[in-house]
Structures are given as C-alpha cells and as structure tokens.
Image (tube, rainbow, N blue to C red; front, top):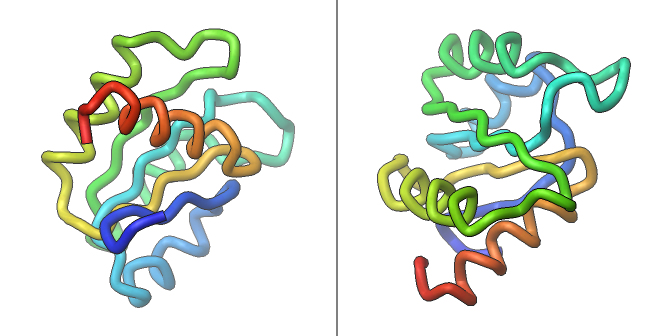
Length: 108
C-alpha cells in the first residue's frame, strides 16, 4: 500500500523470521482468533514475532463490526509502531478496509 505499510493475507509463525529479514519491523494482526481451524492463534504469532524482534499487536475485528474506535486504535498503532508494518487478516480484504477507513477519517 505504501512504503510504511504492506497489507497481506494470513501469516504463520514460521514466516516471522523471513518477514523480519525482508525489513519489516512491526506486524498488526486484525484477524479474530478461531475464524478457521488452520489459522495460528494470536498468542502463537505474538511469540514468533517476539523471537523475530518484530513489534506485534492483535487488533481483531470482523467486517460487520468495524467501528470508529477500531479505526482510531489502528491509527494509534500505525503512528507508534516502527515502520515498515505488515498488517494482515485472512485474505487482506479487511486489512485494506481498515487502512482505507483510517485514511478517509484523516487519521493517517
């Protein structure tokens, strides 16, 4: 999306070291736990990102519950986290919606 933010689909703990090698410094996970049986938990991702020296935050939401509070929280983390940031959800669609919502609100 920008030099500071990439939007992607589901990541896995085994990918975190490579994400750091690619130059990312932070990960934002917006996917709620337990959406799919094969997805890793936010705790597993928190452990793997910590081992890879990446900042991590879990900000879960689903399409039907995107609130202004969630958009504001995302903007707060976006501004505070080391860049570049990799933000993901199941397919990338919700992550894109969250980013665009923050832009539309003038928060980024």
